[in-house]
Image (cartoon, rainbow, N blue to C red):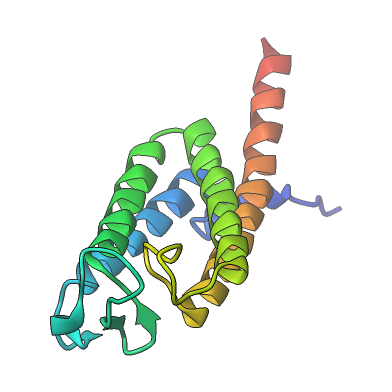
Length: 159
């Protein structure tokens, strides 16, 4: 007789927990924030401005960045690491952060990228990356969060 394992057991074996995932996402954001300040990895580094659509710096030659944009990535990374300390906060980081990125994607679609409204700044490549990040973060938060909610419910029933 075989028994089916709970999907959470499979996720945990792969290291996919809410905390590990939030920590990994936070580390990626920290890395991106740092890379945005490294000439060569960021092309046109001398054309980087603090903020605004005039910034000519491009992370990996593709994604428009500014000092403010890099700082936002660093702060988002710090938030991810800080919130990865428990399941509830890790889930909030993934779901809330994903929602922020979906809003940024929509904002990027409706503004004129050549105006002051593009103050962070971002370009079309950034825009579509925001959509992918938003969907991925919300998906991971919901998928892994479901397992955490199942575990919390099971623990409460035992009490």
